[in-house]
Length: 400
Image (cartoon, rainbow, N blue to C red; front, side):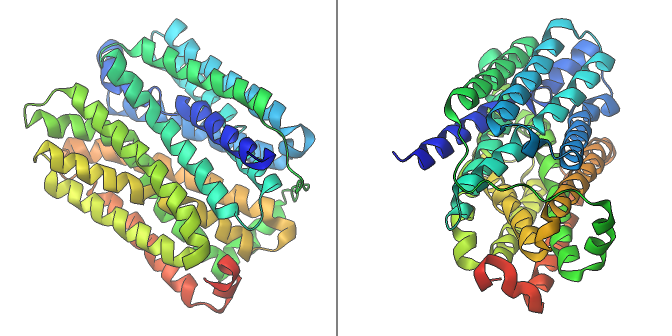
């Protein structure tokens, strides 16, 4: 195996393991609800605090150009260890929501040194085949996000501490793999500096505005589904007399299936065009969102099949919005444009994550996800408008 693909495959494995701590607490929300008497606010904040931490870490990293000041391998490893340590600390020391939220915030903060840094490492090794490589990394993120649900199933849905310890162990293993296996490639270049003055120009530039609207529509749905899918499935399966154990396994299968979608999408986007693939993925995931309303409480096999298709489509377009922004913006401001896009998207997820339990309390799990369809519809419209604009020739080598 060439040094390039050996490094990229080890990076994929390190990302998968390192990102497993993101949804570690979300995977055991039912158990924590019983242990700490959580309300809907508390349950939502277990994931929202990670989102805030990630935004703070990503923005700080961009402003201070951290990825250029320190070797990528060192930054990735230390960030993985720190995120894993914060997750283990919840299991060891947290007996209430307050301390857990602080540690969850820190977990998200340190994960900003794992996922974005891994994407930068991809850029040092790839050019023509970057779409496939980015697809591998996004697929690893997806599998890592699903991993705590599998740990929860293996450990029993009532045993929340072992799930956190298991996720922390996986995160630390990811850091070890990064330390011993990752090297930078021949295409390393300095990242463009962050510049607040360019922010207004991004908003005023229509093609960039459309690409960002597509991303926001995608993010409105993605993390809300990943956060609340286990609860939805538990409620749906209960109507069929099926235990929560199987709902956790179905949640893992649904989220993990996105790994396949990410790899395939990364390859197809360079061939079909970014807007074409994004529109198809957005409409597909939006249809699955409505399907979840229709099939709630239905046959277990049908609901499980739906969430697997949902998992594939909901993440397939994820990397294309960042790629589009990097192709549409002025090269000197790529870092600023990508940092602002990432921060806006993750801040928006806080609203949709918090919205779902409120809607569920009012209308039940059957219709709880219905409001999320607005995101894919807005995103698909934005990408269609972008495809019709003259600047679409800058995307995917002229394929739009």
